[in-house]
Length: 503
Ligand code: PHE
Image (cartoon, rainbow, N blue to C red; front, side, top):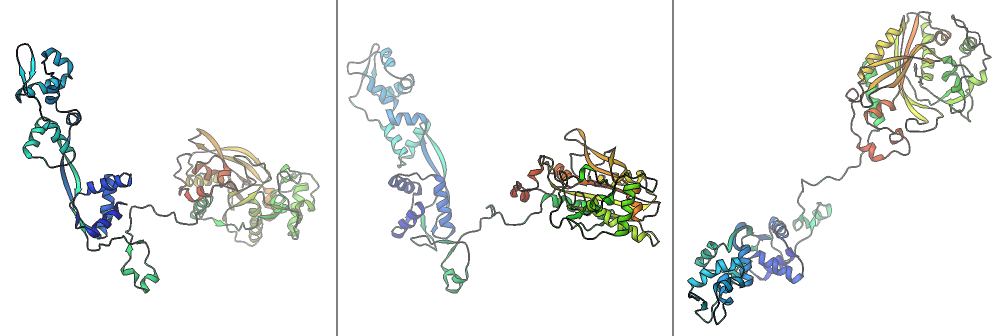
């Protein structure tokens, strides 16, 4: 309303000389409040667009002190003293009693100096019939911003009844070069239409607010798992590993279990632990001669092994499933490598994969029915457990974990096997971070690898390091239908190797 009123007033008037007063009056008429900030922002905006002209000035004005305010209300102390004296006179003691101590102290001497009172030995009496309270009048004038003589001002100042106040103000407000009685509408965009019809000449463009917060832009975001995955992949690539093609989630039991010398009675092959497929429930093709060798090693061993002494069933091996580990892919690739190895020269190989696996598990804070595995292995002549430990140390150091411990473990397809532990500084304990081992002869020899070729291998989940890096303790917050998409957008880039959690 202030902007409107200023423009409206200037239509018929030359200027607004006292803006504060103008605003005060306007506020009173509208029964609202207009403060200094309102005035400032209205003036800045109107002046910025050339509607008005005015410049900033420092305005000095006199305002009443607390004491001054008191006298403006109740009268000057000298008058109060005068009025307290009855016609018949009063003793000084009685007069003192009738008045405030400060009023008596400040007013009595002045009333005497003004020759308003007569002081005899016994009584104080009035010397005149009537007095004017000039001081009070002056104070009221000053309060109302009315002009007062300089000499009077000096006197009041000396009595500390008034004080100077400097305020930001404006010189008289006049019409500016772009004056209009009503403000034009702001526009934010220069449109094709306004260019074509010439409107743009008249339009008032909203100024850029370079301090405004931008609109959150709509963008895609990489899932934290993908970010960690990319870093792990880079580490493998730097170490010279090739990536295995892991794009088939469906496997046959043969490659997932049997080729890995996992016995057919193994509890992991139970439907409580593995998702089997209904359609198609079985695989169509298996490499027949190799199947034969796998059957033999399960049933009666060979290669210095006794085997399981069981009756190996092909139907069991044909069952389709959602792969329970990426080692199923490793067994396929190793089988192909073993074939190549039949024709020397033998070429050592390093492979890795990072992809999804499935387990029929009950879901909790640390388990999901699907998760991601990181897997790596090296196939070469004469590899030892020492090589495996060295490679693991190199690999995990690059992940940011330089303190490792190994614990003997069991896997049907590796011997020896080791669980890998890293030291978690936050939890102050060793946490399991992976599993590893040397693939068994019962697995490698039926594939056709020469006797001195060994494969050292290890696997870990992608979720574990991601959760440690992002400090998430419930896996369901990171993966699955309960994930907050905002989290996916906001999560920072975490650098493996810079984690302060794991040593
Ligand atoms: N396949 C194992 C698992 O699922 C990981 C592993 C890979 C272990 C390679 C040893 C060698 O936990």
